[in-house]
Image (cartoon, rainbow, N blue to C red; front, side, top):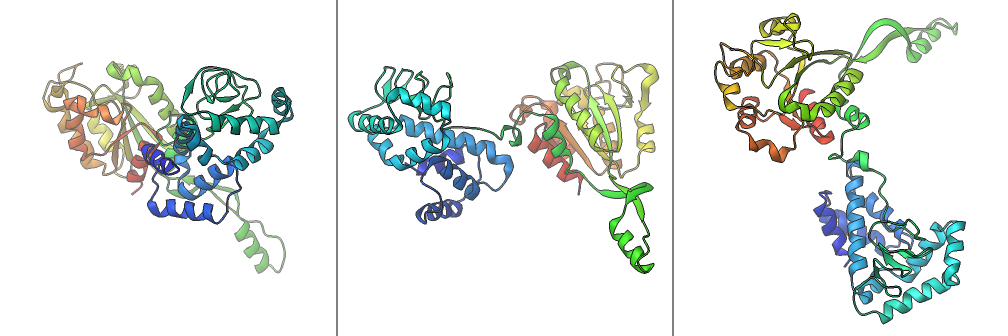
Length: 392
């Protein structure tokens, strides 16, 4: 049944190889881990997980595996969870308050004896009730029920009165598919870094100070240097209005993280697709309008260009003259888009809709073809891939 953990990890897309699994089995056979569940969790995570972004997926898989253990016949459960593992875990994890709750059954020894006795007596899975190991009842063993000072095996906490919780997730924000937050947005954007020293010499230079002091016979000679900054220049082009109203909070979060991360950041707005004009402000007033030709002449080809939009529109808006929903454009949006691609060699498109929905619209497929598939989802992993591409 231990092999089910390997299958659970694969199901959660944790990249575990057979070689790493054999290493874990070898470590267990050599007695590297103490005989208690937390040690198994720590050893397995250390052996099998190579990237912190997969910690939360590992926790989910580990919790699923424990749920399968809880749902197994009692005889199989007795083989998978040795008594000494349970005993060691309870002794280490129980607080003084929890130990007081355990006294409701008499003692920890009595709790373990009753658990072993019911494992031997029970011959199937049980739902509800107050005695057998199961779910939804008042038995001290199982999950999704209520018994103060009991032992939760599998499942999720509801009443939070279990003496031992077998499942704990602490790494949700690290997951590459996690919901966006300022922290993981900035971590993803930091992959687009190219440092240079610029500005006034106002940062202390330790190595130069030591060298200058040595040259002056030990007389202190303080050396300064310009601050080290991210020298990458970014041009952020944001789709606004229409279907993008559903993604305004995600786009705002990305914009805020980009402003905090990049010193040289310029931004403009467009609606649905690029034509002969863009706008400096989201109101898109006539006074804020900038010719796309002026954009191409104002910003050099060293700029990294990031489009943000859901790429969802009528196909005519991409491929036909007059396709704009706001005014008559003499040339198709695709023509202007190709001019931008020709001027800026480093371009990526960030799409706030899930990747599995992209093929629902023909316009999305047309834009991806123009981009040569340089479209990425607005997730930490997607942003990381886009930044790695732009950093080349």
